[in-house]
Structures are given as C-alpha cells and as structure tokens.
Image (tube, rainbow, N blue to C red; front, side, top):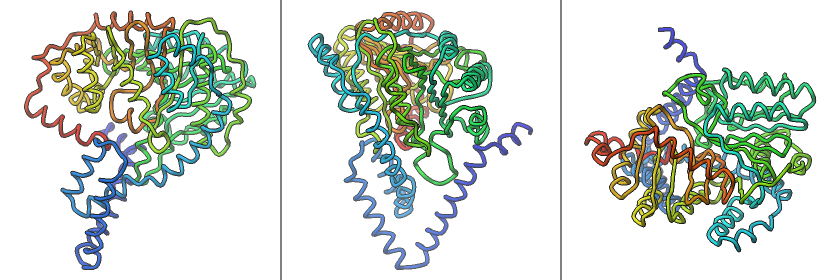
Amino acid sequence: MKKLFKVVRSRFFLAAFVIALEFVQLLAVFVLLYEYFLPITVLGWIFHIGVLLYLINRDEIPEFKLPWLMILFLLPVIGAFIFMLLSSSDASKKSAERHSLALQTVKSYLGQSADIDTLRARDPEAGAQAVYLRNAAAMPCCAGCRTTYYSSGEAFFSALTDDLKKAERFILMEYFIVQAGQMWDTIHGILREKAACGVQVYFTYDDFGCMTTLPERYYRQLRQEGIHCIPSNRFTPILSNIHNNRDHRKITVIDGSIGYTGGINLADEYINARQKYGHWKDTAVRLEGRAVRNLTALFLTTWNAQSRQPIDCADLMEAPAGPSGGRGYVIPFGDGPAPMYQDTIGKNVYLNLIHAAEKYLYITTPYLICDHELLSALRLAAKKGVDVRIITPHIPDKKTVFLMTRSNYYGLIRNGVRIFEYTPGFIHAKNFVYDDKYAVCGTINLDYRSLVHHFECGVWMYGTDCIGDMRADFEATAARSQPVSLQEARLRGWQRLLAELMKVFSPLL
C-alpha cells in the first residue's frame, strides 16, 4: 500500500495523469463537435484526407509512416487529430533554430583539420567515413589523441573522480540519468568543492530521464552550491512529441584537455554498488588531445540552445588541448532528432562500419530493435564471411523491449550472425569494433529511440591504442555469456505476434 501511495504521489504519475486528462478533454470536444455538427463532420473528413496526403508526401523514413498510416485508416478523422497533436514540429522548429545558431557558433572554433587528408591517403575507406562525419556532423578528424578504454563502470568511476579532483579551470558534464547514491554523491561533492575554489562547473541533466531519480527543480539546489546547472529537455505536462527528444548523451570535459563519453550514467547500478538486473556491464572511453574540443562543442551546443544564459564559447573552446602522442585518428560526434540534424548520423556510422568489415565485427548493445536496413546489413556481412557476433543482456531491464530484441535473433542467426546473452546480468555498453582497425564507443543503442529520437554522441576511432582493449574485452565478455542457438531463437506464436506488433509502432515511441 505504501509503495502504491508513493507511486501515486510521484512526479511521473502526476504528469502522466495531467497529460492523459488533457488528451481525453481535447478528444471529447473533437468527437462531440464531429458527431453533432454536419459542417464539422465534412470539414473533419477534408482534414483527414489532407493529413493523409501530407503524411504520404512527407520526407520521412517508411518505418515512421507505416504506423501512422495504420492509425489513420483504423481511426478516420480522430487518427488525423491525434497525428497533428503528437507529431507537430512547431516546438521542434524553434528548438532547431536555437540549436543551429549554437552549433554555428562552436563550428567557428572547431575548424577543419588537415588530418583527414592524411587519413584518406593512408586508408581510403577510413577517410571516406571521416569525410562523412565532417560533412554530416561538422566534427573534425583528430590525429595523435590518447585514448583509454574502460571495460567497467567501476574503472570509469575511479578514473573520472581522479581527473575531476585535478580540474583547475572548468568542468562540463552532460548526463541522461543522475541519482543519489555512492556514485553521484561522490561526484557531487567534488563538483561542490571545485566550484567553491573558483573552478567553473557547468552541469546539465535530462529532466525527463531524471523524473523518477531526482527531485523536481533539482537544478536550483546545484545553483545554490555554485554549480551552473540547467535541466535539458525540460519536462512540462503538456501534450507534445517534444518529450521524445531526450538528451541521452554522457559527456565530461575537464579543462578542455580530458574528455569522457560512453554508456555510463551517474547512478549506482552503473558501478554495481546497487544490483538492479544482475551484474551491470558498461563501458567508456577517455580522450586526451584535440578531439576533446569536439566534446566541448557538443556540450556547448546543448547548453546554449537551451539556456537563457549562454556560455561564452571563446574561453572554453580555445582552452589548451592537452598532451598528444597517441596513435590513430579520433572523431567524437553528435547525433539528434530532425530537424536539428538532417541525417540519422548514428545509424549511418553503424552502417558504414558494418559494410566495411572484412574479417570480424563485434557488437555489444542492450537492445537489438533496429530497422530492416540495419538488420539486412548485418545479415549481408555474415553471408560475406565476416565473423559477426553480438552480445545482448540475459537479464533485461524492460521485458517488452527484450521480447522485441529476441524477435530479431532467429533471422540473424539463420544467416550466420552469432548472438550471445550476457549471463551475469545486463549489458548496457554500446560498442562496435572490427578488423582491429575501427571502433565506436558511445551512447547510441540499436533501437529507434536512439537512432531517431534522442540526442546522442559517440567516438569513432581508427587505429587507436584502445581498439585492441575493446576487442579483448568483447572476447572476455563473450566467454561469460551464453550462445543462443537457432532452436532457442524461435519464439512462440503469441510472442512473435506480440513482438512484431510492438515493432510496428516502436518508431513512434
């Protein structure tokens, strides 16, 4: 009873109740007008046909159009009303304008490195992938940066706190989930101390992602402690699709010379100080050198697009890049929803990696709910003789999502892809590594939410020091995982039907 009372009093429940009430009220008014006023009925059908034609002609991925077309055919007029209510892009256009302005400002400090020409001469395929990221994400290619791979949240946490304690000028942090506990309390204490010593500390968290983990208006507490803070994707209980566009990035920049990104949020399950779904397996990458400036640019773009007090980019973007001396080439990049981003950058980066693999391709992902194009690319790679292996969780965080993940096993395994489930628990790492030359580590899941709706980031690497560590970690993780056989991949009839139905509507959610 106490648990139920706690849920009812929670911010999430109250917000959901208000939104549901708004929807019912608007729908009731629309239905009443439609049923009892003939002119409204005629206008309703004209409106419905107009929306149908607009959707058909809209420049959008087919996976997005299909579920909406089903809704429009099953719910005439009302479906059109729902479509216009939940797919309106007016708010997104305003956000896109602010985002574009913020991005243009930081781009002037990034410039374009000549390293990309050296890479193209060395390896045309790698050069082509780097050119894509330059053109689509406006992120330069950087040579000679040091890269360090962390195969667990515990190792990441130890390194991060050590670096935070050494900060002298500024700290930038952007995270999706923050929750009180050993991890956040330790980092929070360091940030307070640094702010008191005059270090400029900027912190942003996703308001929707932290709805159940942080108090409402938590940013005010941090501001009182001297920490500059804004909630990203500020949640308001109003019917809108804007809440789909969550800030799923995980970024830390220290003095412009050290940067971190990967799958790890600031909550205790990520360092296994709290058990949620068995052992939590996650990863991150630490960067030193000019590539850190790309992460700084991503943070500043997020902050300045949403804050009423934008940060002066000059001081932070012109900070010393720190030591170099590492091998290979690095491109930290960002991705996000339309119209902020014209391309599905994360998806295209993954496709480029899959198509270019020749010997092996190792993938770790918490979810495997990607579109036909990505699934076809994985099957094609396996049929070409590439050793394609994928590790997913054995203990899921969401049972319905896990069912959709498992529904893709059979088609992949039948075509030669090897799939493993991480037996000790939940794997949250989002890694691609292949042929001992290329790797990506970041925040981008293999699902529609990450590939289409969220703001994401990652690090594309070629020939860097940590790629061997990533391969070794994958192999060690696979050894602790159970292989999925073709027979085990078969779902029961009702499971397959339910999974396929959910996948139809997954691009909308």
